[in-house]
Image (cartoon, rainbow, N blue to C red; front, side, top):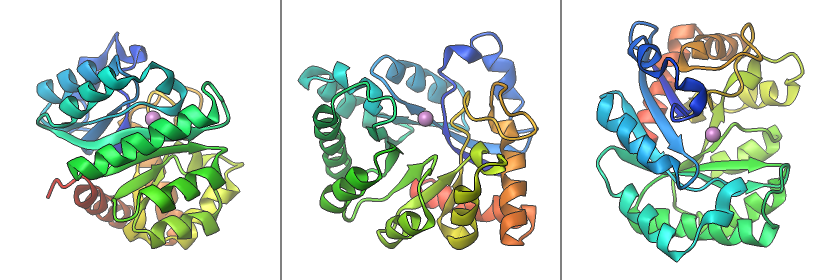
Length: 254
Ligand code: NI
């Protein structure tokens, strides 16, 4: 079944129908979801989701846009949250020079601290990187050696994807791959072996065609898997099965 490796069901856009939507997942072919907590306030919500739904696992971290709220006390809390049951990864963490909410130095400092925390806890990482290709790769090379993880919502070149695959990282592919103007990501999907690709929504954002612009959910991953199958000349089932296997390996859910 489909494994959504990156979702945000704690988002307020799901407040009206969260339960009925999540209860329709199994029927819609979605077997497992990892919900990523991306700011301090989200961690409790992630924990509640994993407690309520057997098929939801959690990740916790602070997104580069929000690292301004991190301090030693919150960082200790993060360490404790990550050690709870059903928490499977540190994330999302990384660099975002598109929104540039925080200075690059502050972003880098907390990115590195969170990578080190993942190493200490022996957990995989979920990396967010936007318009920060060179700095992300440099930090990953210096601080993420030997770690496992995914470069989520991958937006860089095939050459950059190969660099991460060489380091053992997975490439997260979502709705963008169905967009007409996503030539670069389509090339990445064509070139990178299926054994290194993961399905993800980043919902409520980035719904694929034919639902582009609407609120996204894991049910839309059908369109992403179909697109990947077409690009790689594989069957839909092969894409779903292999990406599920990849996700289970990464998040240690075997
Ligand atoms: Ni996200």
